[in-house]
Length: 282
Image: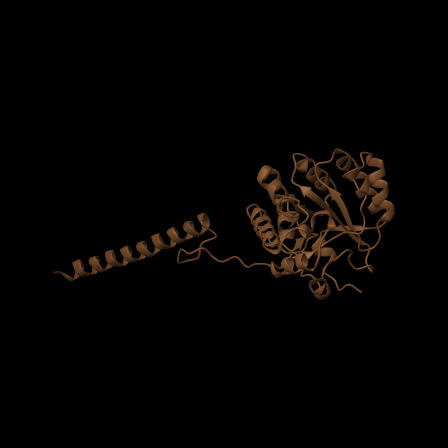
């Protein structure tokens, strides 16, 4: 082989090598542009998670996502709350109150939620097992909207008239019904009619539940005048108040906007039950 041929082959090989490198570079460049979330070895880069969430700057989340995130990041209950046999009221050194709804869900549940969403406030729903089974879509709407839920027995029987095994069975069925529509932590139990004894409280605690009662009751289950319901709540509310309302009632639904506006006018912040009970009670 002549020297000229050898030099020509070397030149061609060098050109092929450079062209190969150039092609690889072009492919890598366009791959990066097309798949910016991939690393150089083709694996998805792990996004850096924020160390905290600034709830005042949440423009990149929609309203439902914010509610769901708030529910999933419930504050820890205070030690005094966890040690208590039952709770009627939150701490009185902050102007905060909690609105709670019993006996749901019902066909009116979505309208209750619409009012809460319109005013962008939290609430806690104490659900009955048989009502969840009867209105599963309404129950799921409560959870999907980011509201806290607790149990209010399975069939609204007075637990203090039942034997221990029946009470335990009621708790099991109630929790099963709620967990069928909610993946979040269930923290609270409210006894039907507010009737309880040591046995009921002990069984609730075995299931990791705090017995939550109330201190403001407009008796909306027997009053059809929405104005009377709203006036009672607004006048009786005080720091740390737990307000008892009921689902499924037109008068309560109609009173809800006036209740919210009246409590705001008195300077109260309306929070979930977990948030209300997250501080030490003194």
